Length: 195
Ligand SMILES: [Fe+2]
Ligand SMILES: [Fe+2]
Image (cartoon, rainbow, N blue to C red):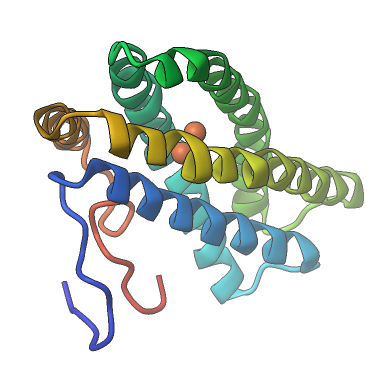
């Protein structure tokens, strides 16, 4: 994988929180791509490729990121025993509910997007629904990511022991080893120009 001069060093599985933040940057980037694609009336070659990449990302890497949080980070934080972590349990529950809510919207985007790719066209009502659904996703993700990055992740970085963080990183590695997906879709890889 090429490394560009000026890139910050790539996070690896020993830095699970940094990896999760890399995932957020990808989520934001692919949401913007979907928003842009939704505004176009026709799918040219470039939009078609961008739509394919975004749909693939949210089909595989998106749920895996949620699992990293729901099955690894949140339980580890809740189990830390610290009063601040106990108080954060309600907020982590809310974040998990938002994952489920976003998942339903991603499912609809997937249906509409796959049909669009297949036929090359989309009726006005479907395009309008595509746009509205992307907007709804952005409305969920913006405060969601802010809460994770400004509240939950700093708390985890402060409270979790180094070996716990290493364990979370290993769980993340196993998830990706079980199903690597397409190259470039992983949070542990830096974005290549043009992807
Ligand atoms: Fe999340
Ligand atoms: Fe997240």
